[in-house]
Figure 1 (cartoon, rainbow, N blue to C red):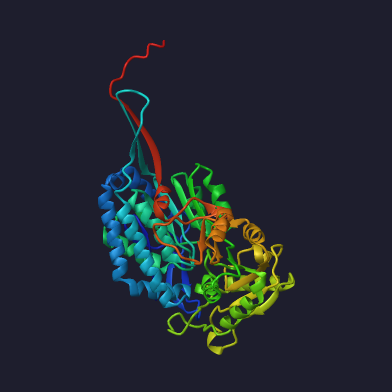
Figure 2: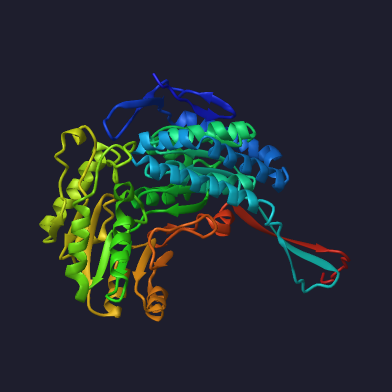
Length: 489
């Protein structure tokens, strides 16, 4: 049995209850590992370790350059163990191993970026209205950080939280998704090897309703960073109010991708597919709402359908596989229900809409890439996040209509505009209410650009300097070099 453990106060331990959970390969439902199934007691122990480590002050008072060196070492170890990490990520999530290798490069890049930023935020002097005085602003760590990551990009999302928290001198407790914890476990081994002190970084494995709930409501946790669904995010906000925790929430999106008739047709088709079907559409930034100009709508849809029919589904370890399975049987059922709803609402099923028939795919959680046409914003399939390989297509006649359709959502994470008219593109992006808007591109991100959403897509930002600021408190320090009596009383 491939038995894993969790990491609390510098030690690898099981769950206090002795409970365990099997981790399943979504390609064939084989058990690939067994991990502890923790509860509130384990979470409290991890919080206590993080609290003691922070209050001790050793990590937060470690020179920023030294903290940066440790984070840089983590990046080097990720690069060293890239193949093992990519293999684990593909086993755990079902995505292709080529995708996972790319993820590992991105993850190492995140750690490297924050390592370089570690000593670049020493504060600033500001003008003082009082003679013979010094007024300065410094940035200090928030304290104990609870970090909750999703199942779709387990280690990538973890890196967005771990690296900035560590370089700014915080301590932390991470809870990965209970169904995809393997690469997070591995990176905690690497953090231990890199020299992160005991108690600074803690890993608790368990369900959201126990571990996540305790992190959100515990009075000794100063910040919660969560990436996941909007329903859970609202519960976390409510629970975090007990001690007015800082919050950084990324709650998904229903992302519009506007295609104007003057766009480069073939490239726009290709990128529209890439924007959705990587990792079987299980991406918060997936461009699942195609909004296509009426004059090219039919031709564009036909081109998409012809490409989609040729997709190769299969094992993430097969070099010919283009799309792997969904994460679980439960999630597969949700996607099927979503598609059934679309049919009932009157959308036209252009391609897909079922499980594949190939015998070799029957043990996995596969679903055919699916495209709906004749969609309108009143439909729940246009408004709700499917988080699967499903595209809805709407059409528009004017630029103003395209923008109105794009903004007609409770979400505001990301969006795209395809046109060769750069002035028109700039007019559109200025009016699109999203945290990231791509022009003639989709789903590109990099460590030094901030990531996060408008509206109900969340609060705060990850990546970039703004992602590091989430893990700091700002303090103003005023020093009078020549104090005098005021003689007011």
